[in-house]
Length: 83
Image 1 (cartoon, rainbow, N blue to C red):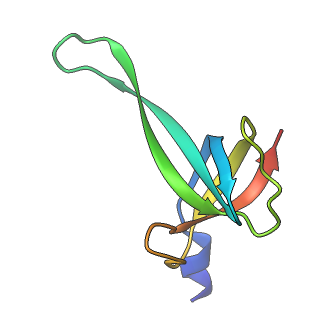
Image 2 (image 1 turned 45 degrees about the vertical axis):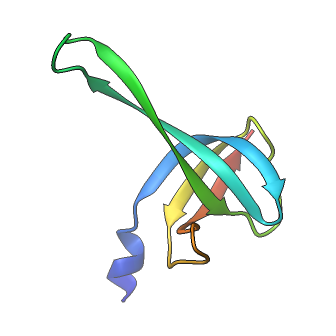
């Protein structure tokens, strides 16, 4: 059980919305190489994350970690907020 908590995925991203109570939307960017053009392209994905204290604001860089499902869309929680 303890081993499972250690191996949870962690991602770093930027808060793009904080309008919900105890929930923020985090945009995570990742760079890939286009197979056709062989150029670097940046793809992004948005995750809803649990913010217990409503500490994160729009523009903050946060680290999120996988957790059990908290609602229909929330499966991540905020570990740390880096302004």
